[in-house]
Length: 175
Image 1: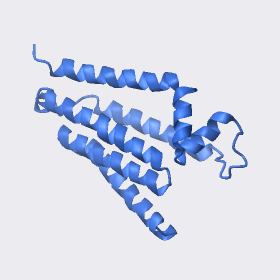
Image 2 (image 1 turned 120 degrees about the vertical axis):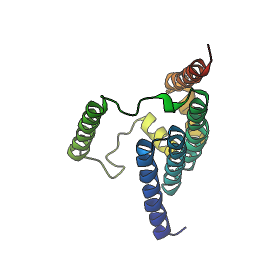
Image 3 (image 1 turned 180 degrees about the vertical axis):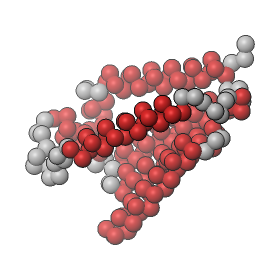
Image 4 (image 1 turned 180 degrees about the horizontal axis):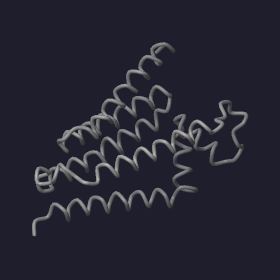
């Protein structure tokens, strides 16, 4: 694919991701929101492909679009009707205020941070080099990272997913 084609694909996928993520929070049907979330995850995987991070794109599809989103869909399908929930919530204004405050903080940090563009300024330690190799598609670097420095976060993520699955079953179970 040419450089112009990659750029066009990147912007098209960015619009798809932004549109689907906005739809996740604005649509009233929870099942449709979960499907928009799957579309968003797939769009992010496409963005990774345009950035030549094939391995991360495959992991994005397998873990997020495949496992987490399907877990959300099953949780929505197994819980008792979302129609019973109240659509008018008195916490809407405080939640909007907290979200706006978080957005302003992140925007301020993003604007005031000096971002290094060239790799000469990057620290020369072993882990960032392996992370860079992982993002560029090296499966050996991924295996080394998961078996050495990131064993605990990997295991915590698996326990968290297991707890979410057990929680969905408990919520869906009829007493």
